[in-house]
Length: 470
Image (cartoon, rainbow, N blue to C red; front, side, top):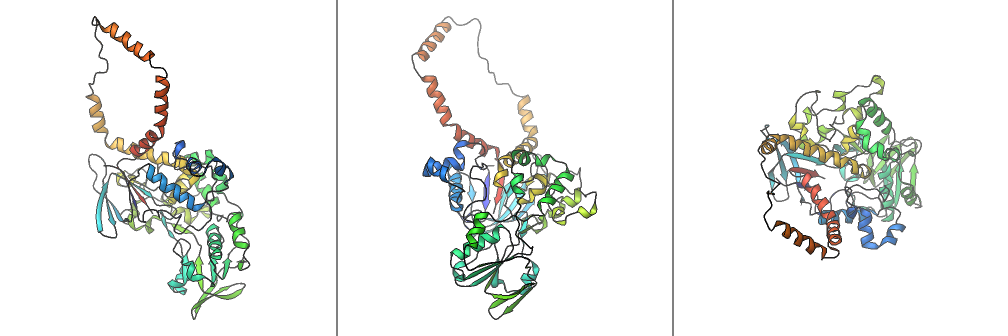
């Protein structure tokens, strides 16, 4: 059963990079590694230098968003990753456990066929930042404004139609300013950013969390420390990058309103009146930058197992009830390799353990990992180890049976040696000596094939797994 990746987007439009991501460059350091899995020829730097030259890499500050997408398309092509695009997963259904573990029936819909069934031994939910829940739009907005008058930052926005228009953005995080500068550069008449807090966020805990020890070993901390650490993390919204803020703020038609939560919304004709403690104004369109909610029960593809999946509220309670954080409590309580676990500790639930939440919902259990480029170089090996461990144990009867019956002879020597054996060995040694540089040439050939071999090994390790992306 070969590995297969399912992606709901069209080919070349996977992920956020050319759809709803509107930053000019990635926020992370250009030298960070991740998708390459330790193969030097696959790092972004190697790709970029091959395309533009070493001097271009040296002068590059941060990775342009479009260039990153081009790199990922190249990465997929050179590794020949089997991706089935335009395929949306409807439900993941565990089948009764058999002698080789659980099998999953994954029902998918495509533009031409609904209800197709795909079977897999392991399922990886590589579904990104929203893959453990959904993008959040406050109910007071949904209940007050027609749907064509607002959009979440993660949705399609027709900025061409907003040329010359007046737009209000709710939220003071990175995506708010990404959309502000994106719209202003495309001719939006005015952009007003409204922030509930009295000042913009300035501290980004992610920067501290990105050192190797934290990334690699956060998952080894005890539950109390993990809980307290993520509770601290959630006190801070991710601030905009300095360049993104400056790119938006340089426009004379940009406005920033701090200490200005939206206290009222009302449709007046074809416009929306936004009321804050500072007054009210009319706008043509609203953009909502209010992040996401993590909750496994919000994922339709998990509807048949969500009630059985352990969340943090099932497994841990702070000693001080006042320190309980309901946002943390609904995160899945994952195993060390991103696998789902049963709500009661000690219960056997192989039908859950074969589903791996390799997405942002792993934050509390494994720290920055699945949806952070900085954590990927450590996270992916944990995931692969979990999958291969399960596959080996599922098939242990087969492997151990073959092992106990192993009788292949390696040594084929005989004694006494045949009369001409010594002469034949001497002739072989002379032939090798007569070929100058033969050993060096073999070494060069071996080095040239190293990248391909490493890539093949990565693919082999993921065999029998179904990866679901968004």
